Amino acid sequence: MRFSEETIDDTEYERLRARYEPLTRSVRELIDATIRTEADEQTVAEATRAVEALTATLRERQITGTHGVRFTTDGRGVSWGNPVIGERNPMAPPVLINRADDGRVWTEFTLGAPYEGPPGHVHGGISALILDHLLGEAASNGLTTPTFTGTISCRYLRATPLGALRAEAFIERVDGIKTYARGHIADADGPTVQAEGVFITPAWARGENW
Amino acid sequence: MRFSEETIDDTEYERLRARYEPLTRSVRELIDATIRTEADEQTVAEATRAVEALTATLRERQITGTHGVRFTTDGRGVSWGNPVIGERNPMAPPVLINRADDGRVWTEFTLGAPYEGPPGHVHGGISALILDHLLGEAASNGLTTPTFTGTISCRYLRATPLGALRAEAFIERVDGIKTYARGHIADADGPTVQAEGVFITPAWARGENW
Image 1 (tube, each protein chain N blue to C red):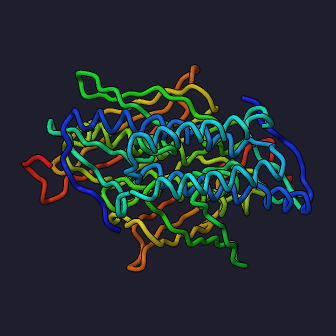
Image 2 (image 1 turned 90 degrees about the vertical axis):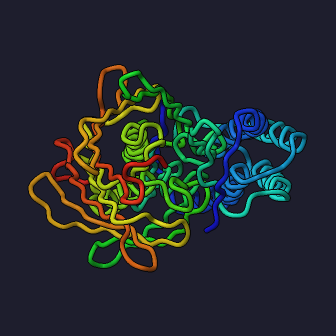
Image 3 (image 1 turned 90 degrees about the horizontal axis):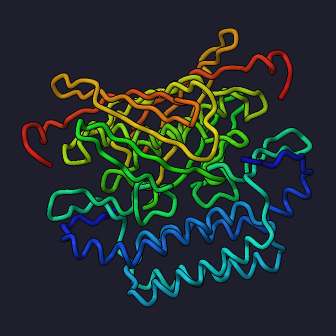
């Protein structure tokens, strides 16, 4: 599949974000409503046709293929379409990454109906998705150091309730081309899922920036 | 959070599926269009207002809280809102689970822009999400045996391209309350991600059906 690769400056980034983020937020709400609605047949059929018409309008001008990763002029990665952090992906909660001075990353987010596995609780794979991303952010210094995931393991301590959650991750140690990262998801009572991952620096990137 | 718990008969299930599945499919397309559109400011603003209005209409009658798992009268679990298999969740690809006579489960599905991590490739956490679910389906005999995930580990052999993929999972062995499952995701050239998981049968469920 084709994807975009380009650099955008901060002004352009903010301009596009202001244009597309409200649409993304509205579709995020529509996802929740689509799962939970009890509307009658006619209402649902009309809504379906309306959504199809909107999609056709938006597709009149669209990129070929997928977004890829764009970079701002100061080197930050802009992952518009990313399913965890993407500001243009309605699937993303989204997770907003905070970075402490020591390189530790953390985030607070809320998960509702679209992320449910066991009744009232977060799908275990959604926890794995978020932790994979967060450990990757820690290991790659915010996607500025190229790494790819070698392995990731999640240990489920107890079921994670839907609602307000916190997650964090940090680099445990670096051993040659391998970076070992750890992290967890927690509710108000403490950690529910722990994760550890091994991230690999590819040969082409050793000793230079991405 | 509250969630629904109820049994529905097959006729009612099919009736509701026929009503809501087309809406879900249309919102799934809208997610893709939202990520990829290059529509101008006015078009996007109008689309945003239209989506908000649709959401309000659908929310006029909606369930309180989340869907939970409902059961058909023949004991199948119906996970409408599930982010991997949910027929009413626009986030779900959706993955349709096939079950072989030997208990092995497999599925073929296509992932596009909303599932992208590295440019042109599947987000590693999305692979983990799908494998967590698939191993859980294998370990729980299609959600008829109650299990919860103890641990799951994914090994990334190479990047998984967006596009047509296949995944499968099977029970490797059962040891007391622990069920060991394995699986993988593959593209046309073979496996890209391998997974193994340990699933636990909870004390309250040992020796009886869910």
